[in-house]
Each structure stands twice: as C-alpha cells, then as structure tokens.
Length: 218
Image (cartoon, rainbow, N blue to C red):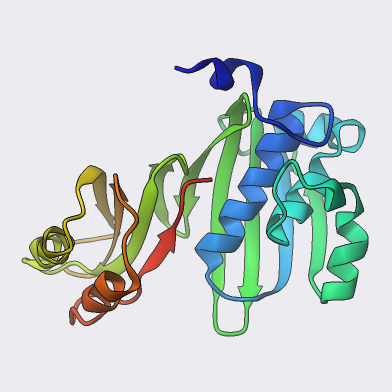
C-alpha cells in the first residue's frame, strides 16, 4: 500500500470514495462498454444511495461515463455536458443487493449491445469492478488490462498467452471465469506493459475469441 492509497488522488469534490472513486467507476464502465453509450441506468447501493446528493456521487459517475477524470474542473458540470453529448442517464437508489456499501452498477445500452457492469469504491479513490454481465471478477484498474470474452474451448488460453509472449508482454495477473463448460467464458489479463494494437489484432484473430478490450491503468 502506498501513501496515495491512504490520502487519495488529486480530485474535484469532497470525498475520495464518493467522488474520485465514483468518477473512476464511471470511466471504467465507459472503457469496458467499448462503444459510444446511448443510455445508461446508474444504480446506487448502500452509502452511495444514501449520501450521493451531498457528495456529488451521481455527478462524478456521469463525468466518468463521459471520460472525464476526477481532477477535471468540468466534473461539476457533467449533467449539462451529458445532455449536450446526447448521453441519456437515469439515477436509481437501490435499497439492497450489494455486499459493499459504496457500490454502483450500470445497465448500459450502446449502438450494438447491452452490458451490465458492477463495481465499488473501496477508499482513497481506489475501485474494483466486481461483475461484467454474468461474470464475477476482481478488476482494479491498476494494470494494463485485457478483457477477452471467448468460447470455452481447450487451447484458447494458450493461444492468447503465446501472442502476448511474442510481443514481449509479461502477465502480472490472469483469471478466467465461465458460465458453463464449453459455452462462454471471460478472460481478464493484467500486464506489466502496454499491449500494442498489433498484438491485440493478433489475439482477435483467434477463432474462439469474441472480442478484445484494452484498458490502460486509471
């Protein structure tokens, strides 16, 4: 743990958990969605739901969904910017349903898909993405990260790691979860180096891979 995990990041707003962390949750959701967001329902749980108006949690999350960072002076105007950008959003207070008090979930609609993302703000501006659609995971945004939905077939993981090795990319952490044997799975690969577009395109050519999303460190 570093001193910045304790005192939090440079930011606009009163709270590292409820403002900076909230903005990072929104930004991570935008990156994971991978396409322009047409509309989003933002569900707030626990402490987020109780105090979001006073802490500006809703404003920060919308700012993140627009791609704004927590230190951006435009964060406070995110609702107006969203309206100008054509981003339709709705805030919902949820009475229960999350294990962590500072949890938000996103029901996102893009041009081509619907996607559900859930995460929590754990203090000092740090976040964890805990679910994408039906897949539970633990994504912190501290590493270069590849999110790879794919068919659950033997050899797929080897093919992905081979392409990373060819590009001299070292894997820091890796997890694979699946719905059921032989159907759909999700691979999350955190790396020490940035993954080049060339390497990403090579991974996308793997028959079992549905898509590849790259997330730089937040």
